[in-house]
Length: 344
Image 1 (cartoon, one colour):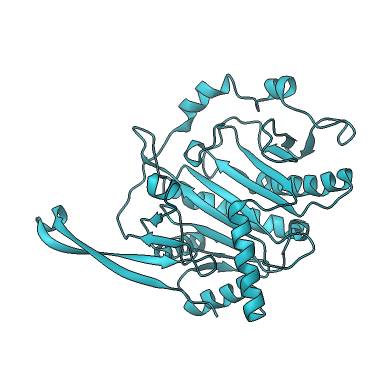
Image 2 (tube, rainbow, N blue to C red; image 1 turned 120 degrees about the horizontal axis):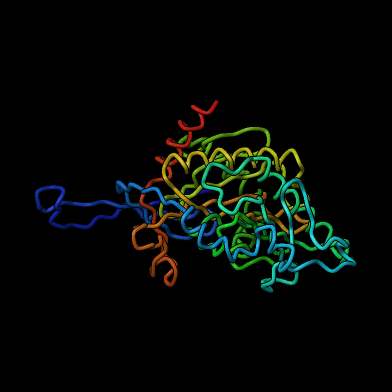
């Protein structure tokens, strides 16, 4: 049912690494087994360099809308009929309306009082509290509006390399009745797969990857962490698939605590590799349906050259939709697996 399709291709040039001899250089084209999205994989040695965001943090803190004094003075507040206090809170995390109307229900969770929290320093409890608060907000706004919204689009831009414009740690959520564009494509393809084979795609994909034994990083009763076959980020990608959750309403506290622990471990790995940022997004079935299992995708994000802040997203990716990765999913899975073993 599931085919992990890849094609080898080569180019030739006079290589400076081979005394300028004519050299065959090989790469792969891989295809996402659900969407068919093509990814190019080059095995290239790539050393990331540390980026110190404290200096940028000092500059931006003076105008940060999420730091305590400005938060109370300038942050948007919820309709008192929905939330008399104006903010929702869980532990240190505070959730407020997003001033930009990305969706009819757009909110921001502010994770910490600290303005700069470097990679690997975010406590897993804080991650868990933010996830919990976001999903609670999605449920509460549904009750307030007297309807059940189908989607809670939780996402996280961590540090400027991710495209995040505010260094102060925060997540976002859009609570809507319609999926975002890529989410819609995944749902459509998952539905096609279910109609054709009578099975849910991600359950079959987990079995396929377990048989392959090359990209699975960890498995427990709650979730599977893997480096997907057609990883799209420049330094690869990581996927967390929930075994028993299909919609955001299925995200129990036990599941949230477990995934927060996994994300925390990934941040420690990123720190060890001098990866300063990432993008994270949550995808799920519409409420009331079991089109596909809920899952999270995480892209490590780096500057190609930190001296000039050159990003890792270029024209081929942004305007042609051509993804490329400088590391194979298999190598990523091996490195993270070994790193996690040392944490035990």
